[in-house]
Image (cartoon, rainbow, N blue to C red):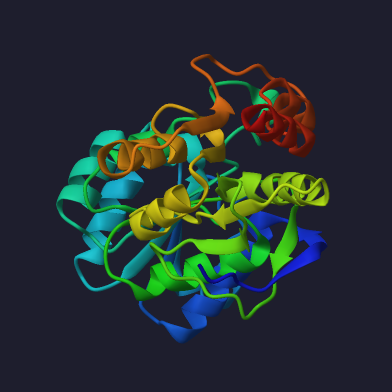
Amino acid sequence: MKTVSWNRTFTEAKDPRKTFGEALTDAGSAIPEIIALSTDSSSGSGMGPFAKKFPERHYEFGIMEQGAIGYAAGLASTGLIPFYAAIAPFVTARPYEMFRNDLGYMQQNVKVVGRCAGLTYSHLGPTHHSLDDIAIIRTIPGVTILNPGDPVSIHKAVQAAAEFKGPAYIRIGSPPMPGIYNGDVPFEAGKGNVLMDGTDVTIIATGTMLANAVKAAMSLESEGVSVCLIDMHTVKPLDTELVLEAAERTGRIVTVEEHYVTGGLGSAVAELCSANRPTPVHMIGVKDQYASNGPYEELLGLYGLQAGQIADTVRNILK
């Protein structure tokens, strides 16, 4: 099990939407087929720099997410590579039929970006929360799901999505994310990154929860717990080889995600282990309920997603 290089002290936190916009502009500079689409939220999605540099390759729709998905599919059929970004529940739940039929079934080369995912639209309540987007898109065959956990990963996820052919969903939050990786960290869709290679317990985290999982793992490590920590930046296709190796190595897995425990990363890991190497899998995420609204950090605390709470959960499992 080979670990990657990462920064234990973290680097300056950055706005994930701004990082996405910078990454899209960089990718667009190298790949002229890339175009940018949004539905009444281009600037909020970080597409401002792309629109300024490539105005002829930028399309702003009104509030018509279903139509935008179909439009993107049509553009992709001509050889273009559309990146369509807007608020996460409005690019997954609202246009689900178009996502499934126009993008998934037709295997169109469209990259859908759901921003402000999870609980990050904290004050606006369940209509703007996106705790089911991974579950929804996981049911569509052939769609890659990328859920990067720091600014470097966001940049690399955009680059990777631009380079492989086929539909993809990229999930990002909105609060500033601390830097965990240096620029030379590998990023391959479908391959997780091992940050710590311990033997007592495996923690598998994804997306916005990576930083909190790292803090929890370092806290446990300081107490003598040997933690195997994995950044699963790709939820689909899941890195099955790595998960099964970790299951064999530690005999217990804890998954951490800002998503319902149903249908997300934890479900994918449990489905894999149950069929191949039965292993206890404890899923940390939001249970079967509509989430409350309020300050973001308070909501994370309400659902056990803060770093200290993650560490406490692992301690209880190890007793």
